[in-house]
Image 1 (cartoon, rainbow, N blue to C red):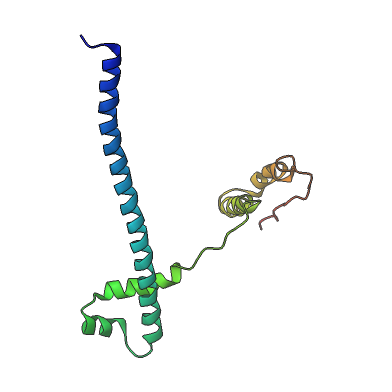
Image 2: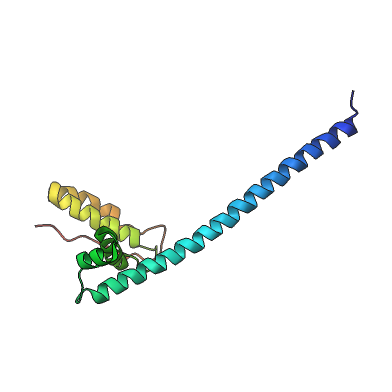
Length: 146
């Protein structure tokens, strides 16, 4: 029978081999993920440039003509052209009040189409109170819908 010291040494030896394999796997995944991120960023840059060139040349050559001359599917060309408009960086918004303002506007527009004005009146006390114990007591009261 093995001594407690021998058992401990065997466990450590087995754990060392497993730890080395885990470390190697984690390292390789990290390297590949970094490479993927770099390639994805480069691809995004190329697609934006393609969209810009397509937009700049749209007055002299159509997407269909480009597809015919380049053997690039018109759907891909159109996607790059349209995609350049949506890849602009988003503005950072303050989280203070933005969600509440959107929710209030959403509730006002959804209730104005389906509920009578008396239902909106019941929501006023909820909107009138200070938020999160704030000292500012200014309120937003929606205008009556006619």
